[in-house]
Length: 260
Ligand code: PGA
Image 1: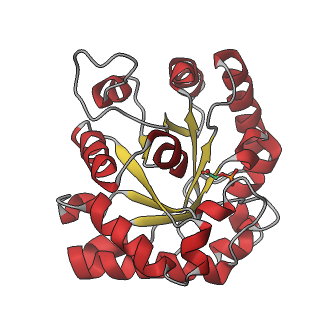
Image 2: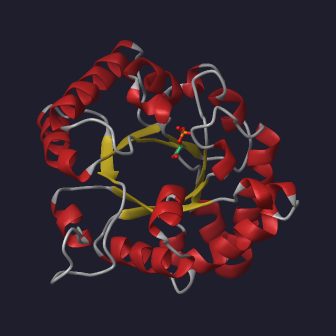
Image 3: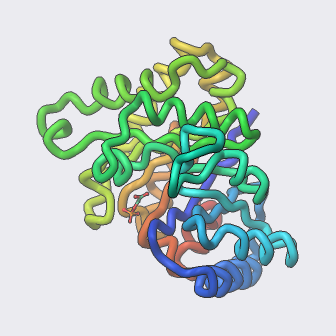
């Protein structure tokens, strides 16, 4: 069973809903022009909450070959949690993916592996797929303990998730020092950690889970470096920030396979 690469554009806090519709349409036209083959690489846009309904309408209405999702979710199902968005609300909008534990959430909102694990479970329970982020900060990398650090995070965020669910979810390895800095990890750096994550999944959840789980690399991915990163055996896609806001650039990233 080959894993279909997942190229997900994390828009972060960019694009209001009007701009979002424009960007999605432009992306779809560009992919069509380039003769995109969705079975070779899955394209997804991960948009701000306020854009989801509009993005859903245009993607479903025009049957565009794009998946869409959200950037965060509440650990609660409903109730007095002002400002929060429940997994059930996102599922009702047909979100396929929900990013949990992005390093910006960890850094600016104090999210822990335990909370991220609880959010991932809510996403799964609502029938969606979590994209669970892990990754080390620069000091950890400099100390040479990045592999064990990321495996500790991975253990925490996957705790108690059944093996058949682990097989279907997505883990994004994003070294924090490479996010939005232009400082991309080498393909070997990406493979080292993505391979170690798959090894941990095999050990903790079994071979089937390890074969199925998709592991993305994220951090300054661009059209000019995606091909060599995707050539690594344990890298099954990319979580793309800045470069996903330009339709042409993101379309080239999605279609990395035409160069490979
Ligand atoms: P970047 O962001 O591609 O702009 O480095 C990646 C991410 O934070 O998901």
